[in-house]
Image 1 (cartoon, rainbow, N blue to C red):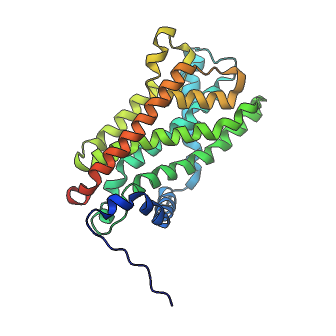
Image 2 (cartoon, helix red, strand yellow; image 1 turned 180 degrees about the vertical axis):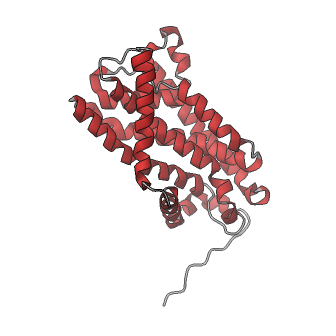
Length: 275
């Protein structure tokens, strides 16, 4: 029988082999993502159905408030579809951001006992939320069939915007995860940020209602490009994609992701000491 491979921890090794270690520890990543998926709905009466109920209820509330009461324009498409095309990426981002932000504290026992690239923990938390997102697409398909609205060729770009949503969740999530280890106040800041972000993002309304002189500034919100991209891919020609704002929002996401990784890598060596 072959001898098991040995892992030798030495000074400076993790700096040289960090990204290779991420791949070598991929089984741990799979395990954490699968564990979190199973635990999320364990001992609930309706289980994974909660992944469908939450976006559906959010869509109904926003449709009533913004579509029926405020009577905001819907870009020529049924308001429930306009809203749900935005609720999908927002719920994914909100869930991933929250789970990733609290992931290191929730797995503090692992951090203080064994070596592995700590970036695996928040990444697996984001992946768990991605599974809920994929399940929620079933509702979108049903809504589009109900209203007789079928996607155009632009639907093939949806995976690219899903990847953009993943990058936004990762960038924000690893920033908060690293900060939350040292400053536990961020556990209370996360719900507040998500509540504020829900109303600052074009979830219940189309971005076109924002006055033209404010569109570029509004696009500093990283979720603007994600939500507008989802609507453009799902609704097709009935939804506009404000290119300057889209590019700016994408640049903000890239900046958050790169600086988040850099800050995480700079501080992760202290996690076990302060957790």
